[in-house]
Image (cartoon, rainbow, N blue to C red; front, side, top):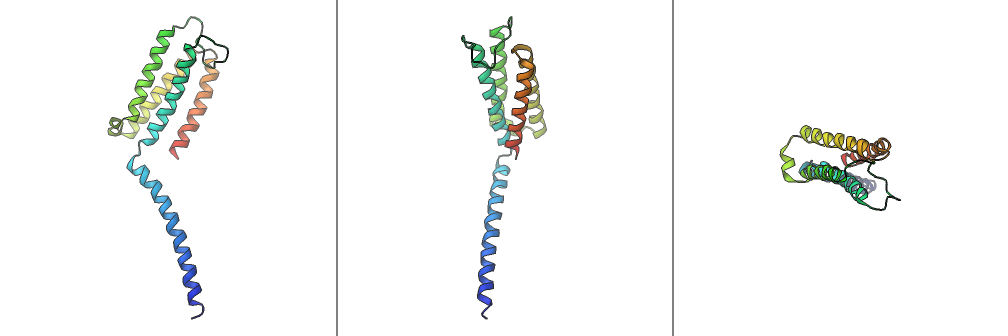
Length: 148
């Protein structure tokens, strides 16, 4: 009987720890089950930040401290319009209408936007190849972060 109470106490402590861990894991699963498309919305918002940075910097008069600078001869108004189109397309992934689409279609649409953005940077921005490669690495890391 003397060993009964310590065994019960240890069992209760172990059960408490297991229940806490299960609760923590299932809460994370519940959030993804409720809104599995939230990672696409989060990733879309991050891409939009990039595009807004590009747009803001190409519109600056002082080009001394900018990363994104239009190539000589590139049309500013056309570039602004293309960037605005990217943002409009990306805003869709934050709406409830995006949830009605299959996951594969959403991923394909996002991939197409990223492909078009990559082409835009390479063709219209000074040092576009280098900047596009860095942007790809950052966006890939960001997608992996929101996917886990």
